[in-house]
Length: 460
Image (cartoon, rainbow, N blue to C red; front, side, top):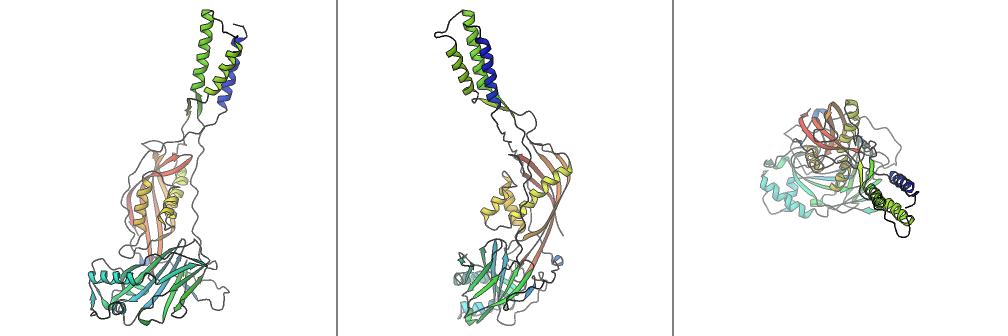
């Protein structure tokens, strides 16, 4: 064996080590499963919290532009509202990602039109209400159509319910409640998915009940409203945005952190080098000679070391995979945008869109649970079924502690969510304050909400 052989071995080992060190890697963090969520009940009606709407600024519009009015009044509390004549009133609610068209007729007129030979009762029992709604759904399937400019949207199945009160002055009706005929309305609702800020909407109406010549329409958008009509001869109502509908609030950026690069241990290359050295010492001790000399052996050995350096590579994390959060100020910057994005996800109305936005801030089994619980909390109780859109949100972190089940931290915090929704011509304010413990864990360089335990819900 030639004398330069050992120095060549050492140079080969050095070369292989340099090649191994140049290969980057990224370690993924395992997210511990921390799921415990308390009941989130639907928010109660708060008539006293109806927002004061400032007068709309005057703008130069087309000569035929409808008058702009304030948003709908708050939910009434008067239980003695009586219907004294035929009622036909429509409401158009233009919201980011959804447009809702609602129409109210008095129940007496609808009964006479749907069942002209049946006796008209003085009150509607729960069973009669159900039968009336079922008949109305079959007749109203093609009454309403909506287009955004030139695009005609698919027509959803209408939702029909018996409503108590007057247009703009309705009251909740329990599932098993009997209602006097002179207090009963029949409400029709169509919900269309639309762009976040549609340029133009055209509503076409075909439901001319018992020769009704016209259908008054009041359109609500943002904090404003305007009035118009649909006639039996001109069956379309046109609403133009003209920049008056506020765009939805943007999502907050998901908090991120820099993932430290782990040290790569090329176990395959090390074993190959040690094997080559062992073979070399064996030849020296036994005084064996390699056929063809040592040069081919060195070349094969170095080539194998380079190839083996990519096998059995073990990443070794020299420090924590994510920053250790111990200060309230640090936790505040992480928790607040994650919780805010949870509510922003429900600006969307398609389930798949809500899940997609939620997944940006929520991870694990909590994603499904949080979807179901928040839907319940943001949906009006009773038969109305309309979802509240959160307009104001604020969160405060009170205490921070380590996550007992792994990486991340647990924050004791409270937050306020305030929203309002217009429905049947009036508004429903909602305000909830939560005290909860949230678990935040790292995942691929981002912080995610993976645990939520609600200790208290206060409805102001």
